[in-house]
Amino acid sequence: MTTEKPSKHTLARAGEHRVLSELIIRGYEPFSAENDKGIDIILRNGLKVDVKAIIGSVHHMKVTPRSPGNRTYSYDNMEYAFQIHKTQRDKEIDFYIAWIAELDEFYIIPSKALTKSDQQKVYPNNPEHRYSQYKAAWHLLK
Image (cartoon, rainbow, N blue to C red; front, side, top):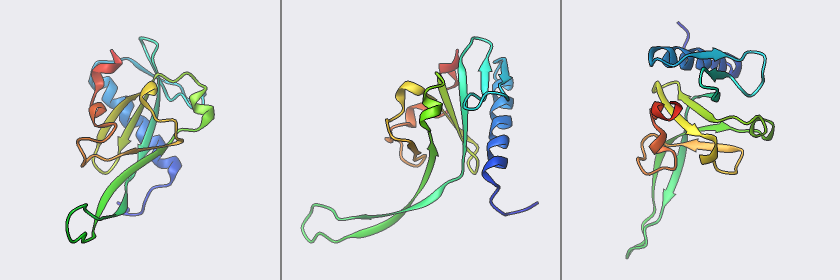
């Protein structure tokens, strides 16, 4: 088994297969949309899904509290980011499923909940981050 970071293409294919298998186990009827760039999976109920397989990176942060002494401290936070390109936004995708490969965690994010930025970020260690409510939110696909 290799410890090298997989290529983007390999990671994307693995993510699609991982999400397809999870959907099948959970009783959904997913169909792979292999010929349509942007839409990876179509569910029996007609929902269109784009899968984003992501590997984290360390985000170094510096904080200076607003208290007497103003001592700055640093810490590292894992950041998981994925791109949403304009052409993807135009595909009428209903949900993005972000699969964090290292943690084997899923975020089922409605397209309407995305920020306007091309880059979306997930912080699993922060329960108050923008997308924490979508962690394992498979019920949204019903």
